[in-house]
Image (tube, rainbow, N blue to C red; front, side, top):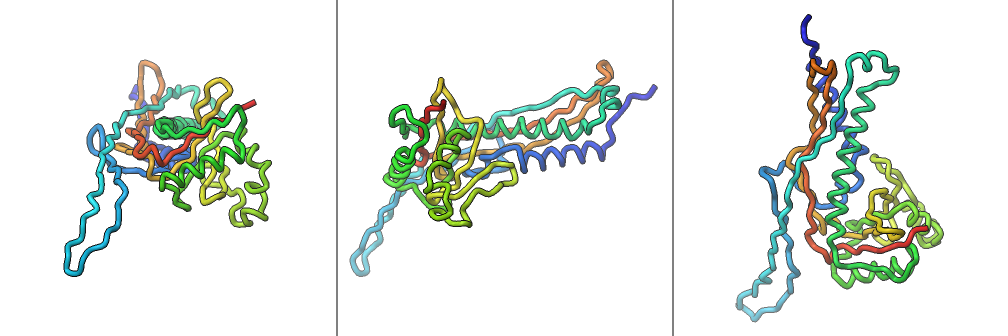
Length: 276
């Protein structure tokens, strides 16, 4: 009896579907940070550029160089896998589309890992706002805004805030956040392809995320500039399907090679919010 094989067109279609699902719904944060694709090797370097100062000069004199500080930040890549078995006879008996289920499960697992890497990098900042045991209050938001402004990193249109769902509902109690009288009709909540509910407020895109770190009842949320964190990708999401005759099953494996590093801690503020 010939050994069952997987048709090549099936493999190609599966791999394309996993890649598309990952891009659309896998990661919420990948496109909110500085990223580099097609990295060769086990690590890459992001350059942290210092602040320049403008100077004057005498007529016919030379221009004094800014002598910008270039501090390399290394980002190490790791290999990540999300795979599972598909029994040949189970696949025949299943009424649902097993391929679609595994496509989405694999893409979401890798997407969560991508966001976990970015969140871990964000958590490396030393800028922290606690202000007692309250949740995400207007006072905390204003303190974080002032911190980012004092650090000369606030740049409207390139700022992001990742908060938990309880913090989102707390902000909805603020007219400044929820009312179109303050934010305008164009900046009310809208949907992103990956399914996150987001809105623009105070020159920042605010979004919900369920994977933010929590210790006891304290949840950390982050407000950051997109250049403050670097995400590197050596191998984007790819898939491999192999037949194992001893198990009468296919092993469907999804994999990627990625890493993330904090480039500039001044560009990130963590806000500690107590949850009920």
